[in-house]
Each structure stands twice: as C-alpha cells, then as structure tokens.
Length: 193
Ligand code: PRP
Image 1 (spheres, protein in one colour):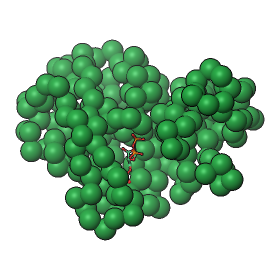
Image 2: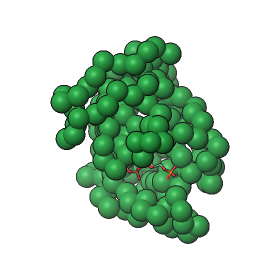
Image 3: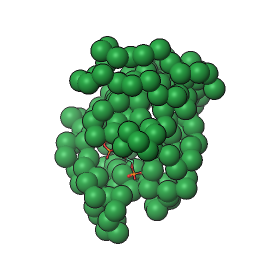
C-alpha cells in the first residue's frame, strides 16, 4: 500500500474532497485493470463482438478504463437499476430496472461490468434479466467483491479485488454521491459518513 494520495481538492468533485488513505492506489488499480483486460482479450479472441454492460452509476470509471484496454471487438451499453432499500430489505425483488440497454443483446456475448458486488442482489437480478434475453454467452466482471456481505451467490468470472466489509469510495464508488471521482479507492472513515 502506498501513502496518502495527493489532494484531489477542487479537481474532481462538487465539494472539496479530503485526503483519504488509499485502500487501493491508482497504480494498484491500473495494474489490476490491465490484468483483467488481458484475460478478457485472451478469452474472447476470435469469438466475435463482446457487449460490455456497465451498471450505472458506479461502474462508469472502471468500465472506461477496462474497455480502453480491450483489443477485441466490443461495444458498450449501460443499464441503470435502483437498489433503493435493497441492503435493508429482505425482498429479493427490491432491485428495479431504471434504464435498459439501448440495443438488443440476443445472440451476443454479454459481460455485465460492476464496480462492486456487495449483497449480490443487483448482479443476481441483472443475470436473470439478461439470461432471459438469450445471449450467446453471459459473464460477469466486477472490480470489487465483499464476500462477507453475500446474500445472493453470483458467479463472478472476472474479479479485481476481494475486500472486507468496509465502506469503499472512489473510482466510481460514492457515499451520498460524493467521492465518486477520487482516482483511487479508499475506506471511508466512520467520522466522514
Ligand atoms: C452499488 C454498486 C452495485 C450495487 C451492489 O450501486 O454499483 O450496482 O450497489 O450492491 P449489491 O451487491 O448489494 O446489490 P448503488 O446502488 O450504490 O448505486 P450507484 O452505482 O449509482 O452508486
């Protein structure tokens, strides 16, 4: 682990963002994303078009960095879901679709790209949704996974980092819409929540 990153204050947030201790530095993230992209390039070589489906909002930075390292033919779609109350609710249907992908994925190789798998409910919901559309193949890629929080077990095909049950922000992940654009991932201290 490296020390505190340089202050991003004024560069990438609505409000000034304090210095946070990185859990994963920019360099560590870059290295891991490059490794994931290499695996994906190898696994999908010669298979035709891959459709990356980024789950808004959290995945937008990870997907951008990952996609720019892909050398295989691919296209990018986004989907938005509401998991309002999902963490507290016992209703497995507490995830709802807010915005669907633009183009049909039937017959395509599809990869759902997440920033984090926490309880697993969002990804489980999206897997059910996409499976029903009969893609040629369906895989999942997430930068972070919190296995301690699992409520629905989902298959993760491409994983960046396994993390403990901490509140992570940065690199797409927010706390009340703050910290998303921090260039590194930090464990948000309790006094800032
Ligand atoms: C986060 C994250 C995943 C989901 C994972 O999204 O981006 O989509 O939660 O949680 P789960 O495994 O418990 O379902 P969030 O609802 O915070 O929305 P955001 O991406 O817009 O920040």
